[in-house]
Image 1 (cartoon, rainbow, N blue to C red):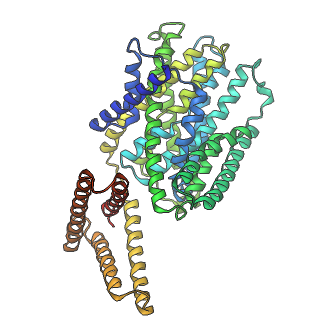
Image 2 (spheres, rainbow, N blue to C red):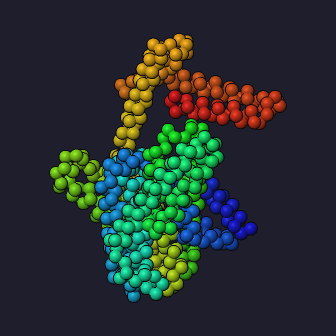
Image 3 (tube, rainbow, N blue to C red):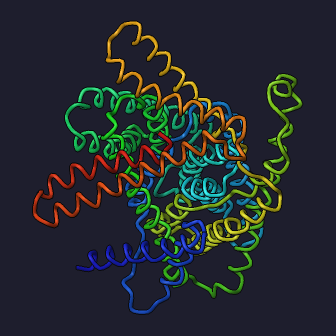
Length: 529
């Protein structure tokens, strides 16, 4: 019964805070964390302790997988150099800097424990970065770098975390002398990618085999995939995170054209609700952890621990800024890079340097210290890690929109231009196909005339968009009027359909079948069909 109450409470929190975030126009991860933080101090509520293994297996795989699935491989590959500098180089630099600062500042705090702390708080969060970046309408290159970094950096930090933890807990883990860090990192990284690609290849073959067996079977395989990839990484002792990311990228590249439209629509709807609920649960749970962390502190948090947390937060923010700028401009000293790439916009460089929001992986790694009772000052490490999550997510997340508006940075329009080009070429191809069918007398002339009229109007509207994107041409006005008219006709059909069911003239099975067809038709016209 306790778990049922906890589940209902979490759903209620996600509903209420999600509604409030929408009304206040605030990225929901920020409000979820703040809401969970406030709710955690409400007396007599059930204690909601977060199990790190539960986070790593239940929350992380599906969220990473679906983000990787919708990541453009073309853009990811194009920005691989800055992504690597951030996901690997910056994680190493942040871990080392935090380790030495913490060792120097905190009395009797071993350097090895400092490396554990640095590895915990070094990776920005994929979920928070994606949620905030997409909402703000940033240029495509900025979004690609931020999301690409957050997809890859978790594996880097977790390798460093395991090595540093082994150095601290010699009786319970491997001796640090037994670990060759470059070899360890190479094995888990390359191995994780290889395992992920192998799982992706296998799943793709399975989906080709079962794609005619109904949407339920296909959706089950889709939901199973991230967990299978994560487990495959665990079994082979490679990076499970990279395995999931590689699987998502591979299937995202191979999937178009494989699924039938109805299954694809259902899959998108199912994944949308799963991602929203998992995001809501995990960020609310992050906020709920603070009371338990404070209760385990051996000294008042508002004295020295608070000063330590402020200093480590400043280190994390400043190290990122100090790394991003040289990483953006120093490679341009190489002539081939200078010729092939445009000079980075300083405004965009600063935005990337400010997008260091921590989240799920940092908290789960910090809570994993509960399994090591001999770890020195574990609750202090957890307190500092939580403060970094809270500061970067809330402070940087809330100030980011203000900075973007102040700098005048917005969507560069590249995606809209590519969409317009794709739609134009598709319409032209259809018109060529119609002309070919006319010569072959394959279809009735009346049907060809009707279809040709639709696609000619569509092609003309795209040309008007190119010539006059800020105004309304006659053809564009005609196109919008047609869409509104179609919407009105669909609404009329819905009204009649519901009335027929209410009067007992049709059953619910007929209602839902025709309603689904009307839904698809309405979505098609809203999308500009």
